[in-house]
Image (cartoon, rainbow, N blue to C red):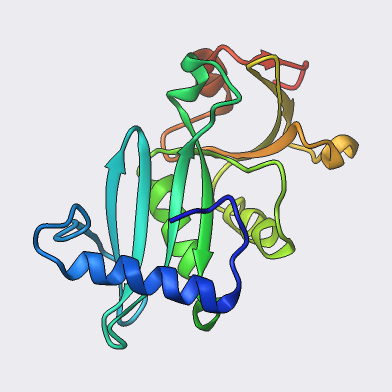
Amino acid sequence: MRIDVNLSHRDLEAELAVLHARMQRPADALHGLPSIATHLPDLVLRYREADGEFHVYVEDTAAGRLAGCTVFNRVFEVDRRAGCFVRSPHSRYAEAYHRRGVASAVYGWALAAGMCLVSGPRQSPGAHRLWLALARSHELAFVQVRDKRLHLLGSCGPSAFEDLDTRMLLLGAGWTLEAFVRATQCEVADVL
């Protein structure tokens, strides 16, 4: 699924239908994916790892269709040391599944598994609200991505947030800012 382009409602529905059909074919790589327990009725989260990236497919079993997908991409703008510990999620869901807690459940699974998430350079207003809601139960900080390094700015939203290099960071389960800084060797701007 291409997450770097905006598809029309019809194109997204068609792409989701193709992916769902692949999930039904026994010989396909998408068939028989492991599932994730969720509190969402009739929705099953299925996942796979490919090339260090995690793909979570949300299947509506009652309707017999795919609701959408989240890809937890590697962050290529940072060096390998930091890149081992962070992923940048990108989601695409059919309109019928917006505002139903689907993305919250998917991101919550990743954070509970210890994944640290870095936002992309642009966020929709809905994605921004999602990150702020997740920050109620996971530590939120701001980082800049420059010169292939992460630079920790702290937990207060900087006035430079309009800068495309400034991103939000959500720490997964088991992480502290101090541990994250040690593991990634990110630069610190006198915030700890």
